[in-house]
Image (cartoon, rainbow, N blue to C red; front, side, top):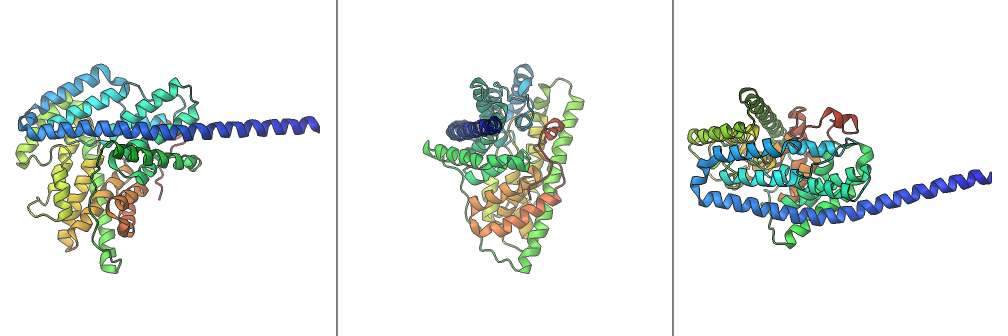
Length: 423
């Protein structure tokens, strides 16, 4: 009896020691990742702001879109093949036992994103930021000999830190990190550490002088039936916009892959196509991030084309589908805000309110992250909008189909990821 009791006690001690060690690694890791993620996000955001300002001041840089595309395509073809998986590679690495994030991903994505923004490609930022922070974090974890399970948790924290530090939405950052990786319920213990990393990254970015784009409060909400039917119909509309964007982007990507065998030439041809779109739309507003269009939608400014969200969709699908480097989040924000403003005009509703709803709901449907997007809406526009954001985002996700801009590989799904959306 005594030897058995001693063995049980020894096992309990070892188990307690292992849990304590894991808790220590996660706590310390989440803290350092938050600081590092905030600093990296601030530096990355500063470099992209420089690129955007330079392009705006020097109009002729837009004519270098084909050249910039060729440079980005050649660099990735010559040096960046291990990192070509993009954000999906980061998501897979959190699930696959022998998965990792290549160390070269950070410099490749950083340089490619700056070059893409400098010449005016319609790309975002979040995908690049996630890849940069995850690459640095995973490389450091491997060097420190951290076990595979803890590395997986730290990768979730890295995604959260990149998101929170870049966009200034700390609560949403933690939720986004878990939702986008489709973690199972047994992984929910990582949530407090992910939120902590996101909050610390946000605080760190602000401490070094980053001022995130804080939008304004929405109109007062009245959840009576006239508003409720609009929320439901708007959610279906926003889900449709997201679904069409994913289909168009995949079509463009497949078309370029089939017709242009030499990979570096694809973004070069894509740059020529974007210049053609500028001529067709008779506007440069759809180049780059297009913050001016978001402001116009949220303020209800007149003069914005009724199909402006369609133009932004095409510009972004061609830019990303041909091989320029960036992300989809900010372009989807722009599409959603423009689509929401147009929906409000057609249904005689508040333009600013539905522009705000569209801004988050289209991204929710495209990324399949409804909880994170509800949090984004409340953090950007205030808690009064919580019921409206909840209804519209959930309906949009349900109406948007199963495809996501952040697809998981079958291998990742076999190791714990799930396609189910956390509703």
